[in-house]
Length: 564
Image (cartoon, one colour):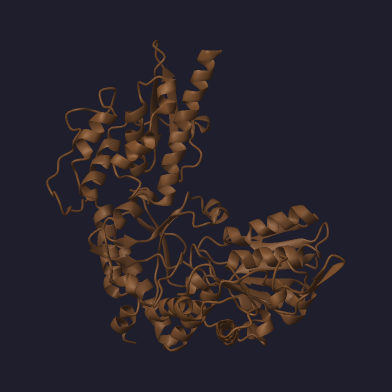
């Protein structure tokens, strides 16, 4: 395995983030794309762009042949029995919804049971909750052990002759646990259940043979398999797909349409209404060809080495706690730093060009089971290097030990608020005057963090549920007082340092203003001048929006009370 040669085929890995070489460790969320995939998509739009199956011209014929050849590529990749068993979707989520509504809903009766596990992604929970509400079926949940393994004894106890559906993940996206799906499928089939396997996290790491597994349905998304976004695959056994009604109506899924009735198309087109993601399918086929050209055993061995090296290096870091230690797992390291909130760690690593994921990873029931608000997740792919792991561990160690990163513009930048504690004397104009001259984001970020330190901390009794700000991924609380002149004064706290800094910026803009001034203040322009929106992740941006919405809600309430 020539790692350098492989890495050179992924252009995104060659760039710099925050003036640092990119270390991309968010592969469980989405993978980077090799040149061959990018070129396949580009070539389609440059030379083959036409709709499939319907045109009477050569371009359409070329596109159709390539599109159906991609389906054949997928069939071979997972060893399906026929191309008719390969249904194009937008991704795993759409595929599970299709099965839930087209297969399960017409068959489930009140009292029937749907068996899930505690480690499922939201996409393999919510569609089944919807179907359960529609049919009166019951959802049963298989628990996990503390190390992240599925509780196989409880699985056997919960599986019964009432179980109609077993839907579980092949690999946990939050912990990396590899479930022993072959054995679970055999048990479930013996009990008469239909088995759906969410393979979104598995296909990029494991060889998949759906016939050997014996599952009824298997699903995955292209974007986690080094292919484009917006393309996915639903594999279903031919007999089941044949018996299922269409899920969506429109072009292509019909044979004949009349107001007196419609005849549906044959498989697989019955489930592919409308113009499909043609370029995505071609990109997925290119990604499969790329993988098949590699020694996948060597790739898997390299990924295991990356995970073991990361565990080895991180285990010596003060306050590092690995979350889960599954018996069998893919290259996912989920952890916490006892001294830092997960959002702060993610942002500080991002400043060093290290991209990973923080939060609940769309697995909130799993986080509830673990008693955690979320985790920090580093997920490795075969194109990552040992040097990537070492940079990640070194930066994490510096964070844990309370160190600071030098900035490219000013390594000796002082806190701009050293002589003025946070309070009524600091307003939006003060902050703009101090922060906008700092052109380097690292310097500005450090000042925001220092500003957040000057927020008064709430006591435990002040952190009441009625003061909590909903919509913040971290925990945040807000209180309001109104002075004799009618001006509003806010105090707030959060358990994430970056959120405390954003709160400080927000309160500096709003404190001491009349309710109507708060409601008309152009907060977006204020943040644009601070260049915040360019550097906020969606989760932190949503948290900031939740804080602003809470402030405006208090102002609106105060204004209404004044008017009445």
